[in-house]
Image 1 (cartoon, rainbow, N blue to C red):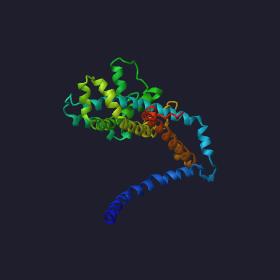
Image 2 (image 1 turned 60 degrees about the vertical axis):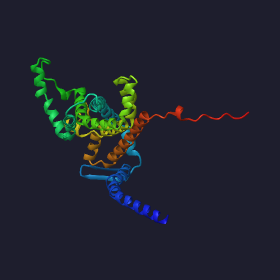
Image 3 (image 1 turned 180 degrees about the horizontal axis):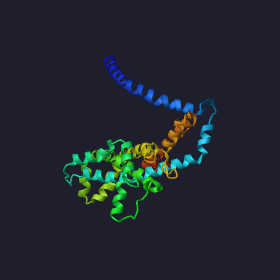
Amino acid sequence: MNGKKSKVVEYNKWGYIFLIPFVVVYLVFSFIPLVTTIYNSFFENYRAGLTQIGPNFIGIKNYVTLLSNPDLWQYLKNTMIMWILGFVPQIFFSLLLSAWFTDPSLRLKAQGFFKTVIYLPNLIMASAFSMLFFTLFADSGPINSILVNLGIISKPYQFMMNVWSVRGLVAFMNFVMWFGNTTILLMAGMMGIDPNLFEAASVDGATATEIFWKITLPLLRPILVYVVITSLIGGLQMFDVPQILTNGNGNPDRCAMTLIMYLNRHLYSKNFGIGGALSVILFVVTGILSLLVFRVQNPREDRGTRKPRRRAHD
């Protein structure tokens, strides 16, 4: 027994050794910056001209200032609107393509080519993508030229001066860049489902639609939760696409100003106290929304899990 225990302890020792690089990287690049950010959020620390103000401890005053500022809620609303506009078509087309690629009855040829093509936009830098769309949809850009020549519009449409066209462009770019990655993830989940379930359902007379809604989607729930939460986190961190497309101003009427763009303004002006508080608020909002998504996707089935109470004897 002692020999077996010593072998187990020695084997476990190597596991802890292999964990050391991850722990070190996490502490240096994640945990310490997180603690430092929370600590700085309780201080007044900014630069006014050439004069450095602080750091002076002011408690939760930075949080009160931010939460009472209507701009914070407007930028949160902008962020969520652009994320929803991009995510809804993303999950729809990703599910459609995943079901298409993984359906053995279709016998689709050149799957590797199609998978590569839909994933390629994910490899393009967001800054290059934004500059491309800025050029395409400029007042004198090719899109306006095509629409005018076809007689669809009489004069160039100012895409960058309309609230919903700017939001739509940001959402569309996020959709194009990320739907390939989502498709690959959902395909992996679908390929992990036992094909015998589909065969049994087909034998019982279930249609393709019924199989998708009653077998595929319920079994895809874990990967769907992962996709939604990671997409939500990425949406709340939306920065590069609207920053470049709107030249950092979020115009018109700051409709494309996101929370990270707002945070970047405070960091650029060296207001580390407000910047730290805003980072903490964004962290809390992300955690709350992720928890809500997880709870909605995984509801507790209390009725099915509760044990019936025994009746007391008379």
